[in-house]
Image (cartoon, rainbow, N blue to C red):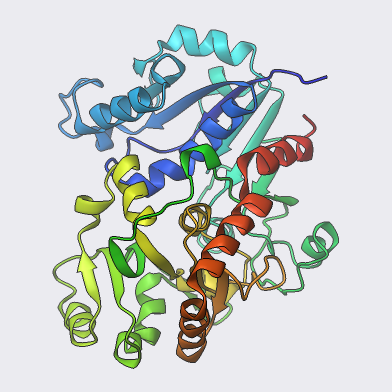
Length: 395
């Protein structure tokens, strides 16, 4: 018999507003669990410094307006709240309402352990830490001694399919990659990124006749561990800087890059990379989806930390391209043994392998577009992924 659960998802939408892709990464879980018939609430704890002027009320800043617009678009207004960290101040559901909801909640899906309020957290029987930034979260905790809020959870789940070394191989026999990332003494359960297919139908029109992606040049600092540097996308892309000069295919990046990065900007321009401002083409869930669905295919660049660690990370953004029937040429972070590659999805580690993938894709684009959608349906359909996730944590 199907059991309807009460579920709280906690994650980040408003603290860094106008990031359509980051919003979708959270929405896939909220909307996917709701689609399965569960009662789903979303709580985002937000620090005061993310609200702008110290005198601003919680409902006034740009972050709250963005939060409300997302809630209205996806029917979440009566099921969501911004919570000022360390207080009872909320925007949306009241704090007393949140306490009543938490008292009857079966599962907390806590992205990056963001929700720490003991009144809402402690009595929920199944409390899942969800790691969407594998390698970095573990290295911050183990190497830099930053509290990543692992404690207090009943289960720890990661999208890094190879986190855990030999234990990872036991749980997923297809994982044949040795991953050097420390586990921090935790048993990391594995999940793929979900995509709610009804929100990501097969796309038809191509406006951006190019390999595209959406990215931050630098998200945050790099980490050194055992003589290896775990870096950002800047460190990955520099290795492939000449790619557009070696093919007739166009490369278009919706790239958040600071104007002071003058050397890299000059190199990108000299090597024929076309740059868009992501605030113009991907700042909302709708514009982000439109940019992906009107692209020809994705050049799926990864942070060098994911590549160096071989952690088995695969982008939620790439999943959206696949669902849209757009082929993906993705930098290999240890996925070749986990996902089918060669049709619709290609894994690369050198410029030559990118060029070979482009040739293969262009030889029968319609076939590879169809295979892209099929991979999304088989491996990333939220109905499948989230049912399995609930089973993993005993629900």
